[in-house]
Length: 245
Image (cartoon, rainbow, N blue to C red; front, side):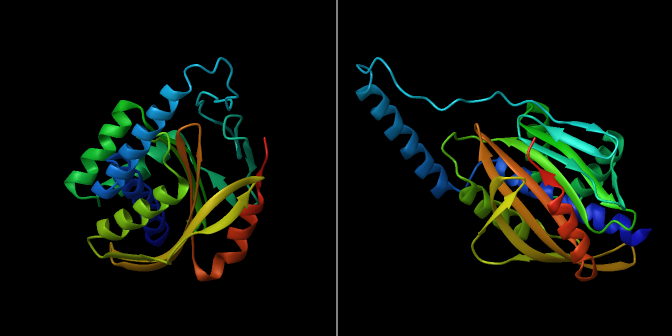
């Protein structure tokens, strides 16, 4: 049970670190680049004021998904998941408890960023599920981006930097370079893959971690999956459970 709890806490920590770092915005270089892009877009908009009709992409307002037993669905995200046999959906209370445990491993600065994001209603935890052993496990979160032109690649870069930097108290993590393209439930994602080790509560655990990221309507959608070397098949079953809404 200690190992299960450790795996779940590590998964929660990684997600919390990513959300905290991205909630605080990008690095100075990225901030400057984004501001330049915003100014450029504003200038272009002014030049188009005489155009009476423009073709605009439909933007859907964010709406949280719903959980019913071992079924999760989100019309806004265009996804539904029926968990494979052996997986259990976490309750809201269980998610809160696990996330709270994971947040405790953040330094004070990152912890404040995440708490502010939660208080301001810019970060949302959608669902969490796991096998009874704790591996594999999955959680989905949605975060409102500070810049509407931010890309999944930029979010992925910040996520890797923040998670690796934030690993403390016996935790280490490293990500592979770059991103890969992936499709979950008919939706295109950027995936970053890495490994993590944690030694706490008298237990040592090694985990593989895959984060699937896409941007929609000014929000980042993050699917975070952690698993061990002997649960790859179950992880693949979990990924196959993602279907279009």
